[in-house]
Length: 141
Image (cartoon, rainbow, N blue to C red):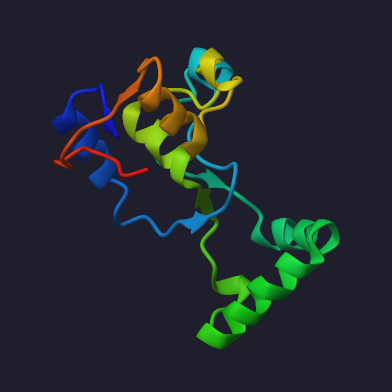
């Protein structure tokens, strides 16, 4: 899906995040309309998280997922202490790169997710449009 924003601006912004160590964490990244109105637009795509607290919450709320994460980390030699504290998910990164608030889409139930990106491109095309061939700046959803 191709964003309707200026492609060179989008690519420059997206590429600026390349050197940042970022943990993929659902629901994180980007900013909200209230933060934007207060002038708190994030310079980085992700949000700072307390990794220990997030994993503890996962342990109590989704113990099977927690166990799978810990097993995968152990198998790859990673530890909780070694994980980055900057967290973002796919749609949070997309919103940040486009410069739009995560909760700025009334058409998406108030929150821009990858499902909302796909639905918009296939429907009303408020922010995204389908493209026949991927080119710089296009997203594959």
